Image 1 (spheres, helix red, strand yellow):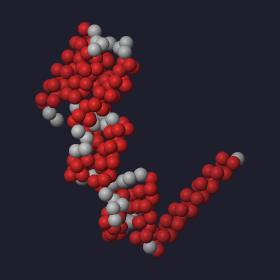
Image 2 (cartoon, rainbow, N blue to C red; image 1 turned 90 degrees about the horizontal axis):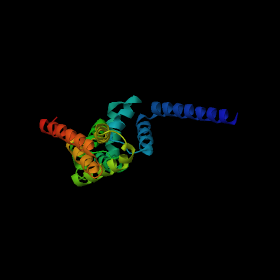
Image 3 (cartoon, rainbow, N blue to C red; image 1 turned 180 degrees about the horizontal axis):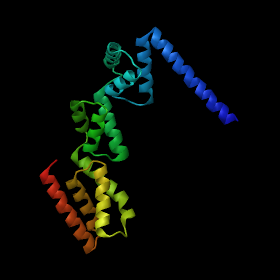
Length: 204
């Protein structure tokens, strides 16, 4: 009963806040837009494009969107370059994502190419390589006992999902398996490396 009452209370609170938002939007649409942006930024950092989308979903007029977002940008609360740098650091450290995957995520969030490029510059090829090695090391034990091709495929697929190139994946998997591999594993690695080299040569 107490849980039901709690849910009911939260529901009433949500409806009340929605009613307040609607009333505020009718009387002061610019203040309403500022409130929406502040709520969005309280949850997590967001790009300017994401905030634009949030305001459009609330049917805020375009001139007010530009005015409010411009003001937030002027005072430094919206900064796509800083957002991109933080995103790259967090997603690479936390999930091991490579430059390719990070660039895709940032562009999906409306971050411009120049900001994306600047943020990715902080991630050196050496750092990316070391992260790929660490990812494979953590996965290696779980693949023991599998046949060579399956083992190579699973390790390479894991790196591919995180945005690593076929060439880098082949290098890291080869390094990880060469110290413990039997002839079957060596053959599987060589086969995958050849295919990866062909893909790198062909390009996108």
